[in-house]
Amino acid sequence: MKLSERAALWALHRTDPERAHALSLAALRLGLAPAPGPCTSSRLKTTLAGLALPNPVGLAAGYDKNAEALAPLMRAGFGFLEVGAATPQPQPGNPKPLLFRLTQDRAAINRFGFNNQGMAAIATRLATRPAPYPSGIPVGLNLGANKTSPDRAADFARVLAHCGPFLDFATVNVSSPNTEKLRDLQGTTALTNLLSGVMDARAALPVPIPVFLKIAPDLTADELAQIAEVALAAGISGIIATNTTLSREGLKSADRGQAGGLSGAPLFEESTRVLAQLSLLTDGKIPLIGVGGIGSADQAFAKIRAGATAVQIYTAMVYQGLGLATTIAMDLDRLLAENDFVTVADAVGTGRADWL
Image: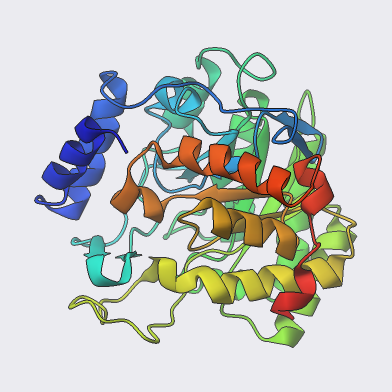
């Protein structure tokens, strides 16, 4: 990490987490963050649901909720970006405070509740982003539902219909723990109906795009099997495993008891076990995106070997800076070479048994 980035992190960690989040986005827009461009090599190049990626390290949803820093993020070293979540109508989210740093645990707890400026504002920014794919890296949107909506399942399809023409992929997020009863939509019947509406909206787009499903880590083996079955039957393009957890096991930080979803280092092992189980259940029929606790190339490599075609990071950047994307990609290239893998795709699932 460069000295300038280390100093910026030091300053951000001395202010309120929500303000620090906003300041980091402002710094990006002002050109004050690393912008090396996507890190790539013949080993790192891969394909995710038909999308050509320069490297398999993506930005998870939740950082750039309103698509306000697309241009600098597209130059920050990532292989792909996911912004949002977006809902049909703007909403403020849950009462503040919304975000807590758990420094001792290299983690965070958030209870944002899909705070965003709404699909219209977000679609405008997506439509005017520079270097749209394939000139630039793929950019996708996390789809959400309004808290007060009378039909939350329909909200996902509404956002996709409105924003879809400006996206390279979309993610159905029924796994956030911060919107009351949202996770109920992971049940078999509810999820089947929800995905049917989303896939109808996808089919109506000028150019149909990949649609992913993001799931929670807090699922039983039976629930996971049911979700995999529903996703395959619906024609979903891939599954993102996983969202934040409600577990607080082993935490040491003072704010460990705060309500919300836990992300960061403590989530790594459980999310990787869920990923490996999904890899077994889906048997290569659809790609998987591994997210949860990744803070190094070793951990990204472990996710890939557990069954992930690509990975996403977010919370680790709170502690290691935006340059982490490039660092992980470069070190991953070295790990692939050291382990005699010619490409990322060659490594996918080769260590799955270690997590079952």
